[in-house]
Image (cartoon, rainbow, N blue to C red; front, side, top):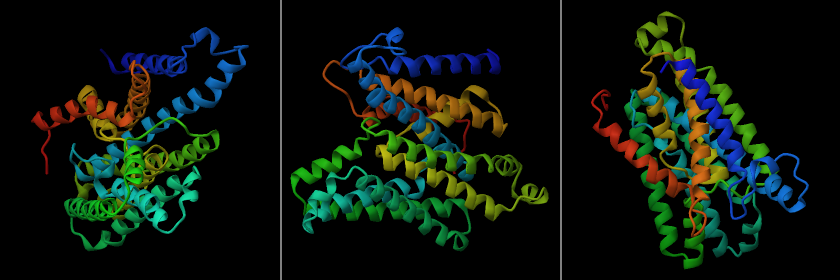
Length: 330
């Protein structure tokens, strides 16, 4: 199948999944009643719960796959993902500090603020970005950046484990529930702020495409056509970190999406055209996240956390990456 007809087909599928996601839940609402419904209860359910959830799924589908795409192109490794620089781990540390230490300080009532965990997660992610940028000039290769990110993740895991060891079971459960991820429950104000950060990250990522295309032919070629390699690396890191930080802050850590979607698009397209691949990653990310959002509501025993769905489906794709000999894992 040619690229354009397949692209248009997935566009139609994405639009269908978006509207279909508004009908799915404990109370099923026919698609024909979504628009112009006179039932006040159904209208409130759609406008204040299901529509924000679907838009959140769209934003996740835009942010994490593009962040994964940028990381994979920067490190030339199909196993690179948005969390490779420790951004997600530091976001978890920010949330852990609030959940565990605020209790010790007698600030439990602050946890009722819906913005607190979002703010803590975002600040943790941005701290990870500053840490990486601080050492950017001192490392000689992209592989060193990956190692630096892994070490940062290891430290955060240790600190989180230490706080969990001395914490109460209810706070540990609160932290674990956040770690499952959730695309529901955001207010319209939170969705608006989320969309703003995602927009900034996407704009930044668009400006990296020319440089990434040149880097395919080597750093010397990229420099010969006027690409500043250092500035390009910084822009890629900042864009990917902003997309990952905003997604993690508003929905919690969501696994495999940022890793798997770019790989799927490369496997389908088999192209080195970065602009074409970028468009496909955007579309496929939204389509897949809307599908995952629908799947969370289809289980008869209750709504499953989004991370369980992404892991169950994403893990086999990651295994296929490991078994695929087309890519060299550096």
